[in-house]
Length: 208
Image 1: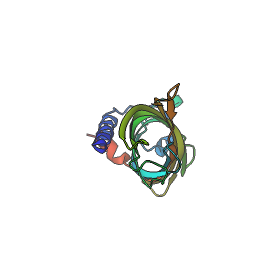
Image 2: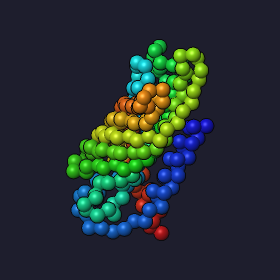
Image 3: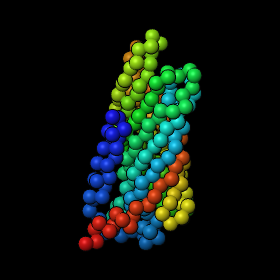
Image 4: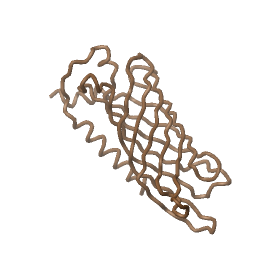
């Protein structure tokens, strides 16, 4: 059920990004050619769920939209939508049903000064869902509005394929309500994956 919700959020954001009009701006040709307006990626994530001790694994899907028509002062600024499911490889000290799912979007800034390497930073906001089991074996499900900060590096493998190494830090507010004040949940981790450049397909929509 939650996976369907994540996919719906991502598909809705994808529809919005391809619906943006394309404007012309004065931007250096070399930099303009380096921009990949629309990319879709998938990766493997290793996260510290901030719950007991140990890391967990999961999958991540992201969509980036970076318009070429931005004014020069904002060039490199784009939008990112991301969904993640952390649900595998629990440690013995973690609840047996521990799971953390997130879906959200926000802004990403990419430096296009280098040919094959593109460092970036991002700020996202969205929703987080978690399943966990308390010490008295009662199972709980909880949801929060969360914020995420992070960044990473992309490396060009060939004309359309890029490798990505990403770090993300999440803030789940007022999660542990039994503490005074309510404690934060701060999952963090890395994602390694690959993205595919859909730029040509994207601009073909506006040529007719």
